[in-house]
Image (cartoon, rainbow, N blue to C red):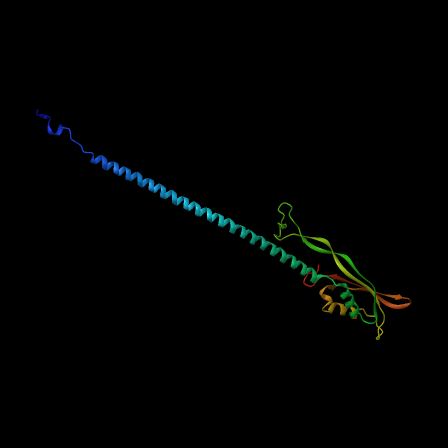
Length: 226
């Protein structure tokens, strides 16, 4: 029997081949494979970068320890330098009394003798800054706009010499030969700065003499006197 399809041509069912479906399947599989490959490749790169980052972090930690040790050594170096400078300053300013007593004897004229040589303390007025308790800084005078100061007594070490002078070959009992020698000797004035002397006429065991008292600020060279 012969089958005749009487439907119009555009309404007739189209016979489809599996080729398009196979092509779409192949494209889908390729796309999935590409995505999987990209994911695996990206994951591998991320893992590699993470491993490299971990290595850099470990190296950075090691270098950080070295830097910290270096900074600590630098601090110790500075502290040691400060200590050495302090020791040198103390040593340079230290009074060698045996040497200074020798100088006092060396500079003394023949008609002088000492009755007392002592180290003592003496108060001196000094101008010190007025501090603001609120700010911890020096106060500024509102009227003059200048820093404020106040006078305070500061105790300073001194050397006090007491002694006598008898008339010399010229018949005079003058204190100036001793004061001149003590105030001009290059070694002695490095440590001692003489203040105005005091003297008076008196007697010693029945002989006319002049008593003198000399005071020296113990002031290492380079420091300012009050």
